[in-house]
Length: 309
Image (cartoon, rainbow, N blue to C red; front, top):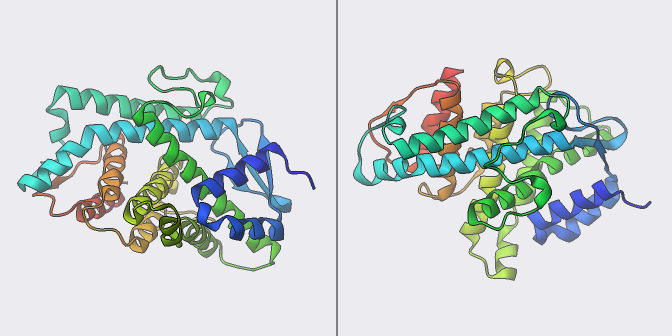
């Protein structure tokens, strides 16, 4: 059967995200034959496994992910200096500190605006109804040439690979007629996609010479970003779960529990910056005596977010 353009694009995306598992993925794809269909825009977010082995997605949902990736990058620039300063000097840090500096305040505003616009886009029928922000390049232009844009592009590509791997696992469950409780299925789909991207990095590192910790950190950042995108695009009334999906914080915690990264890994500060942006959006305040490690602070923010929603 001839592959559609959408199927070919998704295959290339996943293989580029974890090239060390190329042959394994080809075998998986041939065995379960997922059908990828690019559909018309509609209200809400659309990237899901449907009936008959179909995985559906649309332009509007990809645009939402793109906007949120750039919102995360603005948040990284705004918040990260405070995080490192608090840890280095062992000084207190609170949600009020970020508004003291005019430059940081402006960057936070840009990040918050992008987050709000992604949520706004969620409620529209089509991306054609949306006024694209001037400070974000169009995804139709491909990979941005600047360092920040290039970083966002790479993380979103890997994050997209993670999302499609999650949906492919749903297809595998359907094709193998496995009866499984919905929450457990979601968690197992997360675990499958997570392990696919992170489970054999040593092989990639040995083959390419790339530092294993750097590769692991980058891929983990893409999964963390994607997981928090779900938090933003899910109505907060459903953050604690629904009949079909477990609480989103539980899904993010499964990622942080899985990771074997140093407490000072860049992943933790990146995750914290996105969490801070979300907390800013929902007016969730915090105060901390000092950051003892980037990991502990990230997990502290997860608790505060969970308490505040």
